[in-house]
Image (spheres, rainbow, N blue to C red):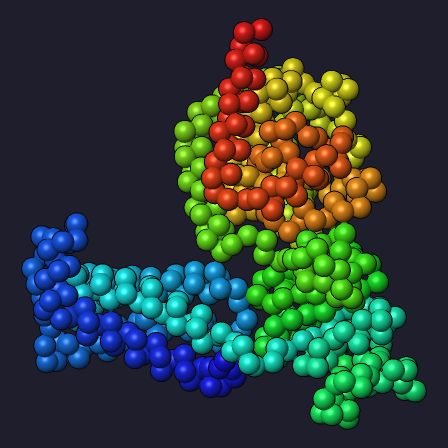
Length: 478
């Protein structure tokens, strides 16, 4: 694995080499002939092979555009594989558009269209694969572990399980004393990592330093190229505990927690050791990709096709009762983060109770709101949240932040739903499991998380649409 300044040097030199190589391959007579003969849209172009000064200009300009667009990737930073691939492809496309713009306006030497398309297409595959490969940690290389928490007692408890490669710990309440390896507390108040007669003698004189407070977590994940974080918090709270998990998820870092928190997180295995692995990525990267493509297509088509209907609903709401057309509410997203969800207003504007209730028990619902709720048409504005990536078409229903405090009292494992993006519909919804029965709802949500595939999503959507059509027909018939 390459890190530090070596990573920057290898990244830049490899991008230059790969880009120059791609131009040379795309400029070959055989490659040009195959591309301009068998590829649709380009089969009317003539074979154009550059030579001499024209070829040198083509290589220089392509290297400059592509290498310049990839600057964000030259910084050594842990990222999830899928994030690395998407970012690299996006930046390569930016470089290709820059070259096309230069050629279109004749601001510089123009690359033949076939050469440009073949070069950028090749680099869109090769460069992401290269950046993923150079970040790969060899199996023989020890990992780098960081202990993060606010509970000295728990750090002492889990310290003997912390790997030998631990770099240090982040904790706001301990001070700056080093963490010594001993079976008893250190005299200076440091946190004890523990001693084992079977450990290598290399550990006998080492220390585990205090690296600062929790606010430094994201910076240290990058600076120290951390691959595992061990959490030792007093409470599995939304801000710090799940904030640390969110940082690990964003940076592609593995996370471990004490087994007493297994009910608050998704775990990778049923085996309960002192430390358990948190399942930050319960789905395969390809499932994420297909799911996002499905979300974008579904939301785009839905917003375009249903725009007239949504305009009509807005008009009916304004005529039915005073107040805004849309109703906004803060909902919980992944890892305890929050976002604002929008729905068509179905109730008289008033501060509502967080206690879940059935619709027939709520006297604030308007006449138009009763129809919208029955037909689920009040949910249509959430297509925008799906399009921008705050929600998914299928997933656990996003719960009101205030309501979740009550739901967690009844169902302590409720926060396991936080490890995936919330959805417009889901397995719980099509089985009519509501927040008035949180344990059953959670059971369906966890079943969906463990079984998710793109085909499972399609089945759920088809069943939900069938239910919606049935409800609409029932309302019209009445």
